[in-house]
Length: 204
Length: 204
DNA sequence: ATTTAGTTTGACCGTTTGGTCAGGATCACG
DNA sequence: CGTGATCCTGACCAAACGGTCAAACTAAAT
Image 1 (cartoon, rainbow over the protein chains, first blue to last red):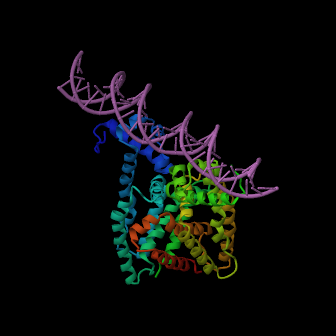
Image 2 (cartoon, each protein chain N blue to C red):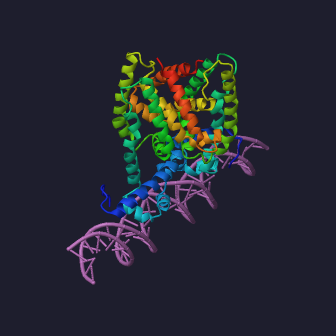
Image 3 (cartoon, each protein chain N blue to C red):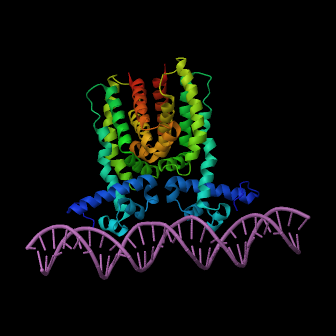
């Protein structure tokens, strides 16, 4: 059983159940740290039953990574050449921060993978991701040549945006340990801070 | 054998050898992903011999974390209240970036730990680290009240510095995959970028 | 109602893992 | 040299791991 297109209603339900449980466990413990038993328990299914739907632990992981890849890059794709350059970038920062708030598990899944050398991911980085970054870096470069935004290295600007926004998902424990917020209020503060930071840094 | 103070020259040599190998393996694969055999092979010693010096895998990991903790916070500790505020912060940023360049393994060791919820580390975060951050946040707050630096939330400012600088160690594979630098030249670019970014953002 | 396709499971397997242990080798020192 | 402390190893163990399989069960179509 490793059909890509689910055929029955049970397949659709259980595959979704398993992937959600797998995301929980992989994002919390990394690929190697996650066990099939853990995922099975989280999904409320038996271990052999998981392996009926996904041929191996590796396959669940692969499915999650490639499944999220597209969604994950959407915020950057939406960075358009029209409109005020500084506000376009700030809007991108806020979209990316919102991703960290709404999908921390996905962020940590990627973080785990990349910190450990991206063994199952390096091709996507050097392919799809690299291409998109080059394209958007060119946009920023053009803005700079027109004097509409500060002359900061576009690639490193993008890296800094990834770093600052994903930090609130990936290092969530640290942020909470230091701020001790009662709820998720620190995301509103982060929003205000990052808007200010990039508006100040980027104005021509 | 779990003496804290090495007594013989062999103990000193082998404990150092083991910790270096353990740092290699833990930082590359995470705690759960690392095996004692791997560490033993990297250290050029037998597995039972490792466990003669460190009672368990857990103990090696603990030793590494607490051993690096102090050094790791040094750059922040050096942030002094005298001198020009903006330049003090920029100097901190550059010290932190230099740590990423010189000690990427240590950075990834911490990253692995924190991304996975810091199970062996949460107490240090909420203790020593939190205290130091509070202290330095107060310094920045005072600068702001004197109008000597931009009014950006001090806590989030510190988070952003951690995020942007550690990014070059923790997500090294991604950075290289996108920039394709021949050598480590991208660190010089990062240095220039981060100096600019924070100088622009922080000037009053 | 019967057949067929799809789903679930308990029992099991080979391998890897962290860790133990008795005994041998080596070192330091009187 | 001798002797006690330190260092090292091969063989071993129990538990955990990813994965298999035959057989039982259930849903759906005829």
